[in-house]
Length: 419
Ligand code: HAM
Image (tube, rainbow, N blue to C red; front, side):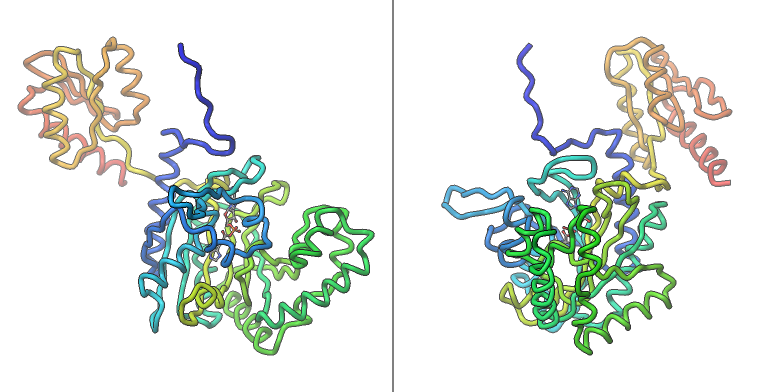
């Protein structure tokens, strides 16, 4: 045998056993997107590296150390997308989506970050993102958060919602100075990572997960003390609307997020605290990004769900439609069985025919494992036996009568299942 070739570390295939629950959740998410008036946008997986440097920020972990960047054959520097927001804005500007309009968009797909793989953290992972443009008030934030809360609730995912405001860029600038002064005064107590961040992106020091840093960070200046009157009103408006909608939240004064484009509101849903990778979904407002990327000033807010993390937390799985009919057949009758299967599919019935050489016994096992609602066994040129999954016994019918009889049984079973 030839030597096997290993997959890339942190990059997993979803096997059929995983795909079924993913597909069921995705189907539910699509329905919820429609329920909130969001429309799909399909974004490229590669973009110019400069897009992420400018949007996400030069001095962020993502751009500094996590992107898959390469030169293409023209010598252009391209990167696999580490997230969806920058590409969504870029495509929206080019596609003329923003000028004097509102947009509610969603996307999903693989993202790539060269992080250290562990449970819940992968180098290829999937996001489901929603982005809303042209709405500057707190109401759209409240609605997006209500959508996120509904998704988690319906899927039985328990997570706390943390919210904070980074204020306007001017508030952030003032806060940054105050924070740097404070952290410099305590430099000897900072860990190595925080010292590095202090010099390059001081707000990120607040994000430290090191327990030894908690005391010093708890005593750090709070961004709320540097909010402008506008920022304060905006945040008060959001929290009031969340209360009216009955969405539970906690104000998290140290929540800053790891991407540079945010202004005003930021939020995260954090599941079980004992997990290192506990943030299942996150987002915020990013009003400056459209102009930063060359478009006309456009209000913007959105969030993305980490699909691997979400799937790891789902306790209430949406139902999917499985197979209706499994056809067992000896090799000599495979041709006839295929004709029957096609005729059933013409009626909208989902059918799998056993086409590998196998004993009746092993075919029977496969039929049971398939979860099909009705099992059909081809006997000879004269007739087929319908072994039903439930109590009903179909008896032997001719090939000519089979479609009608199977449809009848499936109809009767559907009625029982509904009751
Ligand atoms: P983010 O916080 O970088 O935000 O990622 C969003 C979510 O993606 C995280 O909360 C997490 O669930 C998931 N995620 C991130 N990295 C990984 C990884 N290596 N492995 C598994 N899951 C991961 C953004 O990407 C923003 N674009 C969100 C946004 C949309 N803000 C406004 N609109």
